Length: 65
Image 1 (cartoon, one colour):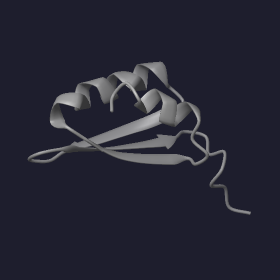
Image 2: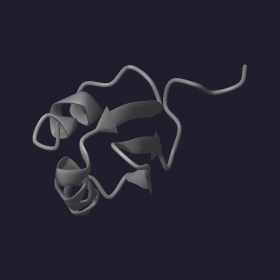
Image 3: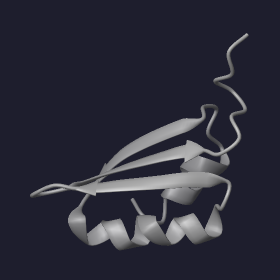
């Protein structure tokens, strides 16, 4: 998933992307924060997986009218 995260962030039609990843893939997801500085990354590790939540710093799609 780590290498695919970039594609999800590049073409996301939302301001928030959530992904469950294997614990061994979490460092790859963290690395994407350097590639996509306009997204905020939060990664919470659990016993058998990690939950990655990526949110645009400047909302584009989920703005209030």
